[in-house]
Length: 316
Ligand code: ADP
Ligand code: MG
Image 1 (spheres, rainbow, N blue to C red):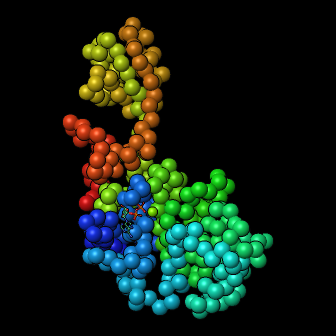
Image 2 (image 1 turned 45 degrees about the horizontal axis):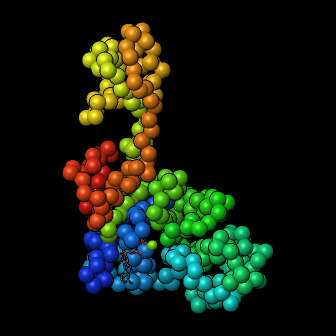
Image 3 (image 1 turned 90 degrees about the vertical axis):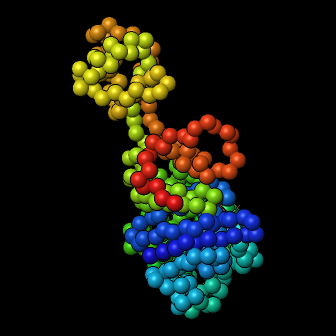
């Protein structure tokens, strides 16, 4: 379990991370979502004790990072995959890491096997593709068999096979009861991987919610209707026990996938429809609306965007 309390990081005038308080729990994948520059990497560096907070603190199972004995056996992280000892073989890179952290040599073979690099273990890492480099970074994170794992944008630049592999790995690590914390700037990626979702924008916490709840609230399917015979259609739909929402812009919306039923009712009553279209609200749109409010310089609008997700799971 990782607990952040009022975590803040300033670089001069710039507040990169602004008073973040949330908890990352074991046994699930927690997605850390935010646009580029939101403060994800800075937060993760502070969680790993690599950067000092301006204010607030991080507790790892109740302890500060400095109080952990053998930190690599507690927490493993994939940060910037480019930071690699290119001249060394994959095997030697991991062996050095193991030896300087009191980890048994046989773990090197085990993690190479886990990430599928056994066949190229003696090859120099600088000849590795991005995907192989990423796998080597993950091998390093797994080396100490830690209960907590952090991955900063692990799928960036990977091919579909590599992306699939990483998703599967994160889920299986969580299924083993570990704490898995993974960042991304892509909602679509989080929707496929994360059980829980923490969203930040401009260093601030925007949402802390279960993924299922986020999806239930934001991927609503509905039917959009336009008709010149609004009042009569409303009577017919109400008469059939169908709940209709009148939107501000002259269209009607009915929850769920009832377009056939609505079309047939309209035909029976000889009503003209100008539109009868099934719609699906997208998670990506919900994420963009959520974070747009935190973007400093965006086009002026007269009124704030409506929040289809409601406010009850929103914090900060
Ligand atoms: P993310 O990982 O979400 O893309 P970062 O944590 O990398 O965001 O950056 C958050 C903000 O902090 C950005 O505006 C970035 O420019 C700034 N920042 C990050 N590291 C430094 C640094 N060492 N010095 C000054 N500003 C920084
Ligand atoms: Mg980053």
